[in-house]
Image (tube, rainbow over the protein chains, first blue to last red):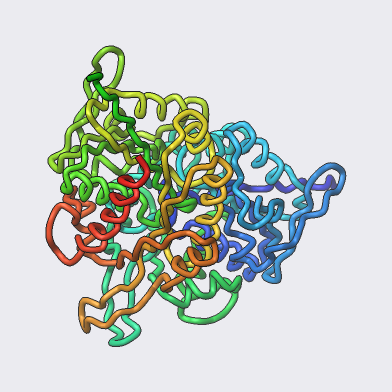
Length: 255
Length: 255
């Protein structure tokens, strides 16, 4: 018998537009996959605005270096993570031109990931150097696109989809974020960013719709506090766990 | 008498993090300044995710070229604008590495701006090539920083502030966006993204706090429809007009 070398899969989480909850989704999907027993790592490719150390509660820690490569920083949720936020000081602007950003991405991905079988990559907004380096140098096995239902966000989500398409990276599906806000006073739902636009867009683009995550203060507060909802069993965990199930099934079918 | 050549001032609107309403603020400030009689132009420097043609309702129009330079596209609000969104097709990803993005910015700024005395520049999220080209090649007279009250957004806003600081671009002040959402059912206010964080941050950084814009469905809907609230007299216009007053006063004091 020969030792089988399992392929490590990269899954890109992109959005086109910033501020739609891509980093929050990535952190919670990683935590949910780890809960299911997957060996999962997370690369925070948002070089200029790294959020993962805050989201996963390991801000202020530094990665060690072994054999000239970075060693991912452990988090208490079973997800090792590498982020520029681990390498630079808070409040320092990472004023780098594209080639530097591309090199940084390479360092984060080409690290000591050990036995991780899946690495989720939290892409920065836009379709620039980091995205191009990612697609050309480390082709992801698949991509998930996140958007709010607002038209302005959907336009940018379509751009991101087109970039994956041209690079022949299969889009696993679309996620709608910030839909359905329950008023903490009367409990009634409303939709400050609209509703349903992402599901409609998925239909038009003939892509799977993976689910909807509501706008909820608990998600914002737990994100700022470094305790992803997907690590617990609150109502806010459910949509993340449901999307992680679909990603898990896709991974099983596409190894 | 000699003809006096008035200096044209560039004002950068930045955020660090995407999706905090930077483009919406920029469009509305430009419209509000035009209402006050200022000759104002708008450069959409968000090369990878241009929103201004949608926000200002001139999507689908193409700029003409005169003497090898672009001629800004008129909008019905008295604000000429140049955006990558005027130059490329909808749904096409602008997959450019940094130097290309820097050149695109140069084309947008170094255009036939005619008698415009102020140009607002809607910066993309992050602190990469476009921001660096902007600061090094076209030093703005001042900058406004936008953030939501969420900790994660404030961290990136601080990075943007630090970048302006190092480039010796005075920060005119901070704006809090998406604070205070009135439930359309019961009318009670709540704060899905928190509240007050930006004012607190402004105090800590010893920078002026310019005001707060609520999260409101009317703003989202009119933004998607290309009719900026600042062009009308609704309740949603008021916070934009108040911030524009302060920018106008700053411009008067700093010519």
